[in-house]
Length: 79
Image 1 (cartoon, rainbow, N blue to C red):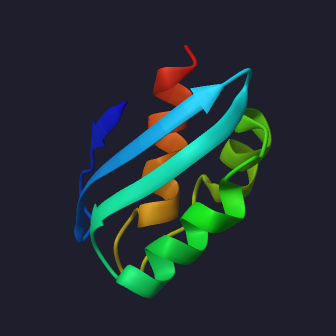
Image 2 (cartoon, rainbow, N blue to C red):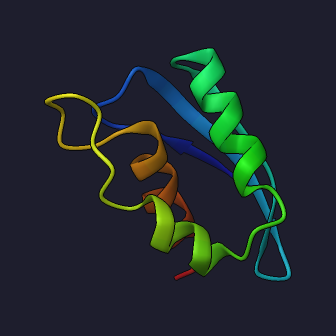
């Protein structure tokens, strides 16, 4: 699934969910090291746990962040 991000440097997040677990995550754009780190940390994690850990994280003065956008994308994908 591809989620178009809002309010952050990355333009989109490409991710796959299988059996309520995050199979893969790829951020398109953004801070490469940080987004690769987030992606590797959540791969294999239960979707609900990832949402719980990531939602609400802010980037500087922005009201959202790449991790928060991933939480939003995961929540939308599992509705």
